[in-house]
Length: 109
Image 1 (cartoon, one colour):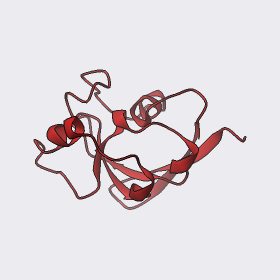
Image 2 (spheres, helix red, strand yellow; image 1 turned 90 degrees about the horizontal axis):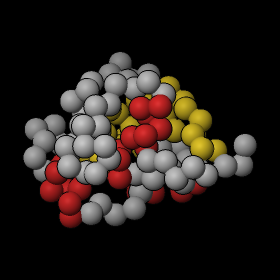
Image 3 (cartoon, helix red, strand yellow; image 1 turned 180 degrees about the vertical axis):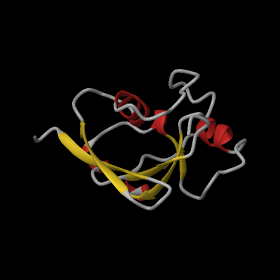
């Protein structure tokens, strides 16, 4: 469908699960992953206050909107931050991120 993109979740063993995601519902990546039964706590409900939806972007990082100061401040408190860490609650699903690949890094995993 024209309003869908494909996202990939990379697992610890290196395998990737493709997921078809809608871009016309104004969902965040966190909301979409939770809706697909991924174990993301999202304790703060997507307000960038808890970092339990932390992901490491392994492909497509350059397609994301710039990180905000608030998001960076929250990520900077984590012991497992990477150069491509983001909070999935701050990534909106849109056609620009088609093919994005993420590893789940938050507390729920």
